Image (cartoon, rainbow, N blue to C red):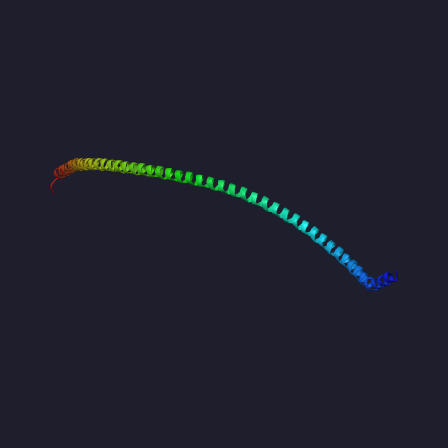
Length: 179
């Protein structure tokens, strides 16, 4: 038994201080492990928060993508409507241009008719004017002849008066005694 106690005492002396060191190291490791676990828990909480925020961001991105898709659909619909309106406007402009061309042709035709009628009226008026001018010339000639006749009558009347006046004077001269 003594040996046993000696061995035990020797083992205690050798192993106990080592066990003490191991216990201290273990306590430090536990503290470090606890701190590390706490830090890992904090990191995990942070990662969970980051993951939640990423999920929220992804959800917002998905919502934005849906809105962009809706906007693209609306833009496509608007573009289709613009194309339809463009086609309709081109057709209407072409129709209007055809109508303008038809009206232009009609107006040119009417202007030509009006010019022709003006020429006819002008020719008719010239013919009437020439006829009227000839009649006026004939009337002027008749008036000139009438004036000649009237002048001759007036001259005749004057000559008649002068002859009477001369006859009276001759009678007076004859009735005076010759001295």
